Length: 380
Image: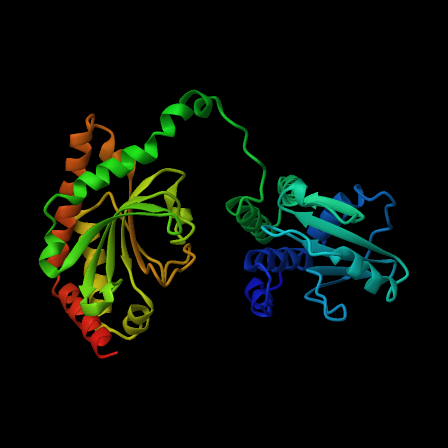
């Protein structure tokens, strides 16, 4: 099979384009190029949706991305002697004004027969009269059906990975409302306030990190999809800075931190080390940070065995986020299952997090790193 990484390496980002759309496009094109069986099945599925179907290629065809249509760039073009198909792919964005019309005008001057194919995340994004309009869910279903019949191990792996990509990005089959959600929705919407209350109350407890000047502040951060207590050093006139920040709380979603693969569709308590741009630049070549990271991992493995230590820089299953290079998670239910009162929940949060802070302070490199980063900021 063709090399996926080489294919993605050829991708050239363009202004005002969605990186996810481009990534999905390149992965999809790679899959089509790598297997005639996949290509033929996908083309057949699309051909059935055309008002006027075409004779599909019996031999090879050309599959390309980022073709230049006089300054306009359709996502993918599949061409063979009898016909040319021009693809536009959408995930989070809508079609630009006259986008498909512009493609059609260009391709009409270059080929004898053509079709415009639109693939989007949801049906409401369909428009501008393509010859066939699909959702990524249709591609998912087509490839899922094929996967059940393939015997080639490498092809099966490739299909599994691409289907996994679509599913993780919300481009696979839509899930129905389940009866459990219907029964418990009104109770569940109280959850945010209850979580906030636990961490607001915990903020007023005594915290070991305060001895190093890391002051706690309650945060509900929508961008990071987390809620809890953020401990940061206060650096002179600059105020609170992630140099580093240490966040203790609840991770509501893993996309920003890049750890979706580790969440197992459940809520997780988290401990996250955050660094601003100055910190990110410094820790790249910091022996202090490298030593701290090694000792932190050892600490988690020896004393906090319910927790997972994730180095987002080197972990292959993570979409690295340089702002949060170290993430530790533990299923919330494991901790809260037998806590029946608000006070018990506050106390267990404080007990676990304070214990971790005590052990963290016991690692000399942690204070050393705080001092080094503060000094850099002061002389900036």
